Length: 138
Length: 111
Image (cartoon, rainbow over all chains, first blue to last red; front, side, top):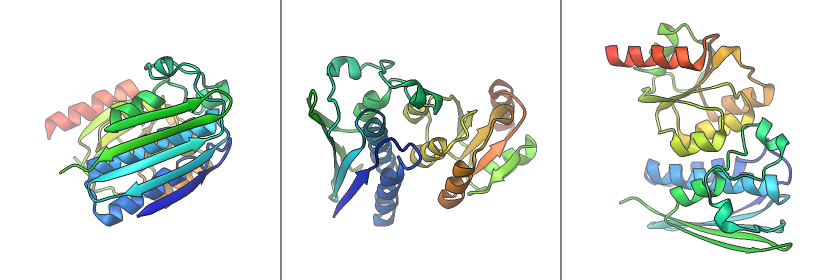
């Protein structure tokens, strides 16, 4: 099963709709709750990153019985230093995002924590593509 | 202890009613959303002063049992609407997160 979403730009109110929809679908399909939680959190962090840093983007989710694949692609500025971005506490989020409770510098670290595989393709000035895999708990 | 029992014992105001019969299995305090998603566990009562729509999203995704807004923190209209749609229990108290956490733990130990 393939699900596709457009993540809106600069809209913190609507960010989370895609991950909530994915969560609902996985629940309906009967996936284990811990698997659903990991997928939902990783996807939400990705969505928020796209809203904060990249004027939105596209999300594709492929659901298989043994694993969930998520691909988040944007046309944002790219990530200059992935190692830094992967460090807990490092954030370049603007003040507006921080006032809402974001900008803890935990986005990518959280994604890594909750996924089994994470690949980041990024090019400065072109955009970023995150490929995430969550294996289904047996 | 269920969310309903917790709300009653600690005299919490129910701002939105979700599954009040859900068990409160622990607690987590914090206002940085990603931090909460990283550290809170499913079933926790989440104590925070963030009452916006993103906090409700975090409740859904992190699968906490309820959100308790401490120190009478505001709960905005968009958050109210989202909490109602998603069935997230939101409670409120004038007490601090520290006070509430201590009280919750006392209750949990006594049960």
